[in-house]
Length: 44
Image (tube, rainbow, N blue to C red; front, side):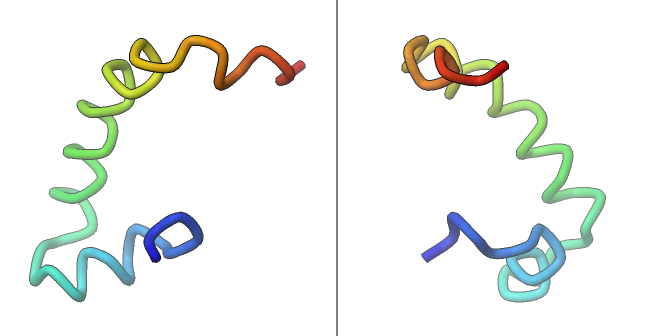
């Protein structure tokens, strides 16, 4: 389960640096949000 896992823990598991994995996550975020626009409707 990765939903509640820190970037540092996932990076360690994959053998990547925190910076590399964070860059991947930041690049992927717009696509994930666009795929499910209703996901943030209740966020204020």
